[in-house]
Length: 312
Ligand code: ATP
Ligand code: MG
Image: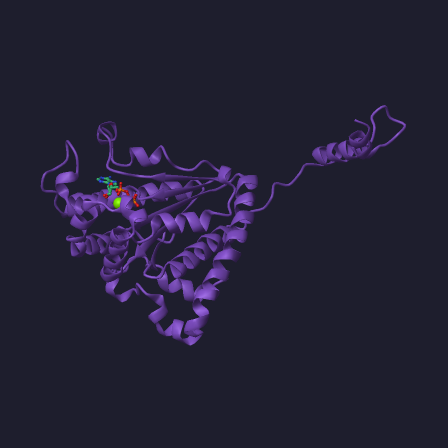
């Protein structure tokens, strides 16, 4: 478990003005990391990931049994920041029936014909489940803020500040509605440096097995790096709230990002202090009766289970 005083530094303080340059992309180069000892960090991070996976499996079981809450995890990042890998590693120990991942791409014509939150609303997790948004309604204040020409039909050609303010407000109200209705919302921005993105793109170009991951569009978007960082800063500043906080996760080292995300998720679910449903006295009596019936041997027509196998 990572001490909360350490994870708290990655939370965007509600109401604060975000300057992404003040958040590390490579945590191993920070003072906290130096204090831990460089060689130990990777080992410790992998241990934390392993522990968190087990805790998450137990927490998900309780989430399902208690049936009072759902969890929505939002992942946003620049290309190659490791959204897919983080989701895969963090969720790998969880019962697949208890979680669902949605990846959002460019909206379809039908989606464009609705309000911008419509398609996300339809994909929200049911009570008892963990829902993961790999990209989300935040694209509607990020990619389209950098490229207003991609806003889709019926939208202004030159949206002004008020247009974006209203979208942030819609998002905050949407998340307030979710929180009031029992959804725990946690948001992660995987914070990658421009140089680490360059290395990862080069990796894709140099490894034939990774060629399929490379897209010209990724390189084109890299040209807009500064505009994206600004759009992220605006969105994070406007929409980090106590009920739906943003976390800026240092993503240059994958093992750090995975350990942090896993620990933050499981700690937040455990903080809900969920309980298994209490069984009524009638149900307890029925359980006792069923147990007595199954344990009863011989003088009954039924044979005990261990004999059934050998005589069959
Ligand atoms: P990967 O590249 O790892 O497969 P990805 O999430 O980058 O995953 P892509 O198909 O490469 O998937 O990209 C999806 C694209 O859809 C992104 O460029 C994203 O900005 C765009 N997109 C998502 N939501 C919206 C939206 N609401 N409006 C416009 N574009 C969007
Ligand atoms: Mg992509």
